[in-house]
Amino acid sequence: MSEALDIQQQIFDRMTPEERLHAAIRLYWSARQLKAASLRAQHPEWDEARVAQAVREAFLYARTD
Image: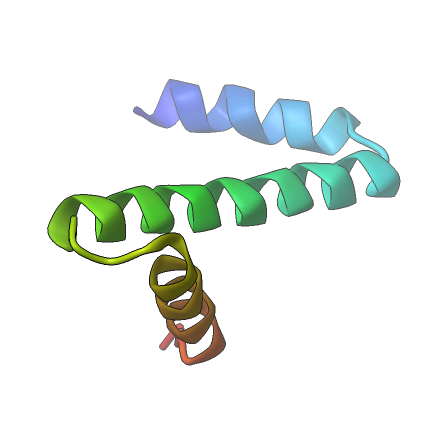
């Protein structure tokens, strides 16, 4: 696992700030898509508007401690 982290760190170190920003943006939108897919699986009765609302709320109130 440590070797994989080292390789990942080397890749990030070679990225420009702009590339890092784009990677972070892609990660953010990927996380939102995964959350939406999870909510659809948990609540198949919800329409897309309800799923979108729940995703917004999840990210609005997300915390990192």
